[in-house]
Image 1: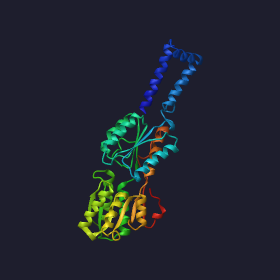
Image 2: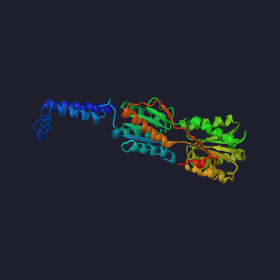
Image 3: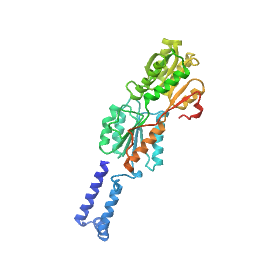
Image 4: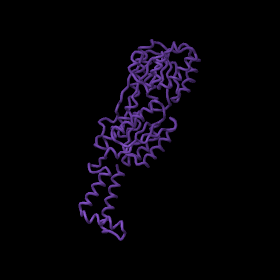
Length: 353
């Protein structure tokens, strides 16, 4: 909160300057000077206290919730990511903060747009920057610059890549969640020796790579044959195309498909339906989208790993408020919001998004 300390010092210097000058010849100066004269030293003390309070001082530099400016850079737009934004907005409302500024990247392939968003947030006087990064490497320096100015920085749904510039990281252990989901998928819906296809997100993306690794290692550990993997950039259309190629090359050897996002699962379902294979192939999704719950109900998907994006956004604001209003740092840098394994047995107990 260096910018607030600087503002406080400037405010004190202005008060001292006015007292030292004793009042000028203008009507405004006389009016101010007259008020100070009437109230004496008490007025100066009061003004100093008000300036300190407005700057977040008076309690070791802590802020009031109603003064905290929150900005959130979301890496794209889909139902899952929108839940993060809703969590941020509702936390601000519940905790008495102003409405946050939320900016969406124009695509999940344009990390530079998030750098621009961070710079724009600084010009808005951000006290808190929450980010779901497209690329930790690309945005790290911009976030470090914000951190150097006293801004609280929190990343969501991105474990590890920004630990040295963030106050905390909120999300889930993607590798473990993927491994446990794929393990249950293999044990409950497949047989040892079955061939599986694993679809991946963006090559190099930390979340995508952790999901791919977890799914692959669980399948292999449970006796499945991984027939092939393909990056499809988190898109349903590219997933459809990839599955069409796999169907052509692997045909009836495909017994299971694992995808790292439920909307990509819809792309795989399209290809399987067109090939007349939907009834013979099991599928695991990832996310907990309503479309996945519908697909499970329709027998087109066996299970999905249900995530909690709303909690990511909400808890990011909660932790930032604790830091700024109470001076309370999170006990752990990484805060895991957990997952649910949503299956053909329990899907009616869950609400998608």
